[in-house]
Length: 176
Image 1 (cartoon, rainbow, N blue to C red):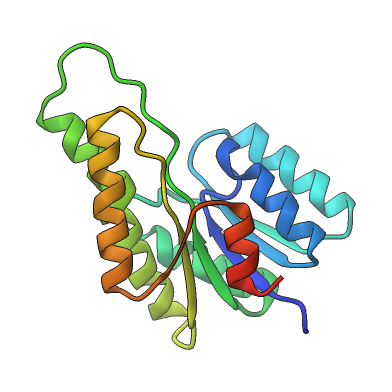
Image 2 (cartoon, helix red, strand yellow; image 1 turned 90 degrees about the vertical axis):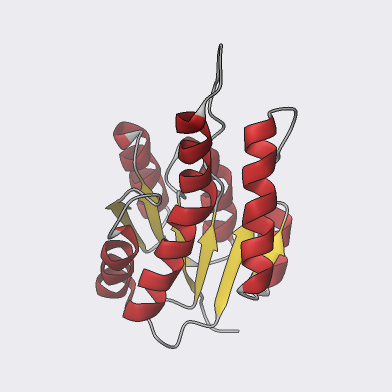
């Protein structure tokens, strides 16, 4: 099998480092996005580059507007192609006290609306992209996170995305 190039949304954030290492060990070229944790993203990039991994970073907000276009263009510029897109769930949000409309809107934007727009934007830049893998978030005991996870699963099924639970599922979906 030829080397895969993978764009991983949120892959350079703290919750994506393990998957980035797994994919690098499998010989993948990586385009990783991050929004927070700039120093950690740079350290991850430097570490993987030091091991000969072809890697590019894009600081974009997956839940914001325009991030998918920027990330896909950076991936194509740095890697030459994008074979697959992996969507990691957002980091859990710590909530205290009363939960209102703003918290629900934030959770749905981060877990579903943003990723849906991100996928649409990436596909516009990489029209032949066939494989999109969504890692399901753990809902836990937080009702907002559980609802957002359920909405993500429903959207991913409607879009016919590969749904997986963890890094092993990502590797299997990518054929690694």
